[in-house]
Image (cartoon, rainbow, N blue to C red):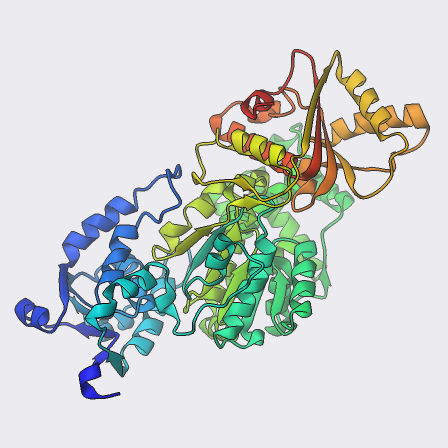
Amino acid sequence: MSFDQSIQTRLMDWKSDLPNKANLKKLGYKVFDFSDLKKRVLAVRETGHSRSSLGNPAEKILNIFRRNQRIAIIGVSCRTKEDLLVLYGYFLEPAFHNQSSLLIHADQSLDQIFGHCRWQEDHWRYPWTLERLKYLVEIGSELRCVPIRPQVNLWRQFWNKLTRQADTSIPPSIAVHLDPQQKAAVNAGDGVVQIIAPAGSGKTTVLIERVKELNRRGTPAKNILCMSFNRDAKVEIGQRLEKVGMAEVVVRSFHGMGLAILKEENQLRNKIGELGDSILELLIAEVEHNNLSYAGKSKTTADVRNTISSYKLSDMISPEDAFRRDQNFESEIYQRYEAELKQRNQLDFDDLVARSVHLLQSDSKVRSRWQKQFQRVLVDEYQDIEPVQALLVGILAAPEDSLFCVGDEDQCIYAWRRATVKRIIDLDQVYPGLERHALIRNYRCGKRITKASRKLIRHNKIRFDKPLHSGARIKGIIICESFESRAEGAAVVAELLAGEDGDEMVVLARTSRLLDEVRQAYKKRNGRDPGIELATVHASKGREWDRVILFGVDEGQNPHGQSSKSEEGIEDERRLFYVAMTRAKMRLEIISTKGKESRFLKEAGM
């Protein structure tokens, strides 16, 4: 490379002395004042959960790095954690991924910043941003030859920046079986990428193709981690990767990942499993006996399990700290529960994730060891993850932040399990430079089913406003019937099931109690259990059938009465009904009670 074709530069140059702005401009730098940029950032960070588009709120700021090869930011303050978050997330990381040369004039040297002990972040419980900054400084401060961009190619360069192709010098792969949106997702840049994947849009195919693409870009398969929300999805992903020659890719459920970390670091106990209901009942009685003020209040084993899970997976707090904070029945039972586990030398399943995250947070050597093992991290069903699982993902993906998150805010149905639709919508507040793509075609459902489900879910406000089209060739069938009573409806469902047997049909309902009504009606008619699967809508997530019968689609059931007291609860229920509808590929039958039909039927145009 001759001298007139290149310049010798650093991707990052950090200065404590104020440079001359005129000289910087002569050298080709676009100069910005940090205080002005920070005002723009703060406006972006006030973005709410209701999004009018899929666009990244920081898009106008990110365009600075797409349009300019050399950028100088003057007057940078590094006094607070907030300053460091803004500087890293909105300027340093985007500059790196767009291969822009960045000059920083700051009030502290890098040695001063790295020497401080105040950078631990409350959310991450370790210096998450600082460690990522160190990584960028190490790879960005090396002197290198950078080609001067020919003037004639400026528009093509801008397009490459816009599509993040500047992240890699390797031409994009060509997967002929993918649609344009799927291809764009697979060929996205190397930073944080968020894929919004509606029902039936081929998300698993995209994830598999993305793994192949990352391997093609040079990442060894053994250094790629795929994480899934449940064991069935993990098995499917693993089998499909094996079929395409990617068997060395590490595929784990969240619990499986936690188990691997604790086992490798010699942090396991002799037994893994839940304490039985009989043991929990004894613990409840013991706590009530020791404190009479707790007696007489209804506390089921299910309530206790949920309380303890919240302490471990949401609050992420020890029993001692929980009791100091709360001093109530819940914190006392948590203490007694953990003492029982310790006495039995046992961990429960929540411990696998919670304790592995705590270990990664508290031990920098362990953290570094696991981060170096995985250069790329991919996550399926991101909308379903809990707070501690989100931490596990973010820690393992650091410091490179090569993270590929696949999910759909419209299918977030596990609020009772500490998932929240806001986590997937607000990912661009955690990673301001992320690249977002939406898959827009439902290949699973017939056209009528896709149209009705789209019309329904657009009533939700907390979501991305995105296109949803049918990719199926069949029109599909929707039948809605109302009966004088739910018992009559159950009898009709039993009649529909008579003589049916197989895996291509299912009866879905909002609750197990509704399914029992169908089961009893069928037994009364046929003298045996149905040969067709009966499942709650929650249990149907991730599955599909040719024919789906939705039973008990009444107000008070869909939406459930307990959830109808707030707009947030109604939106949760609407997402659940959207999931129920989109389980059907060819035929959707809806059974309700006359005069009590769910509002969702009208909203869906049914």
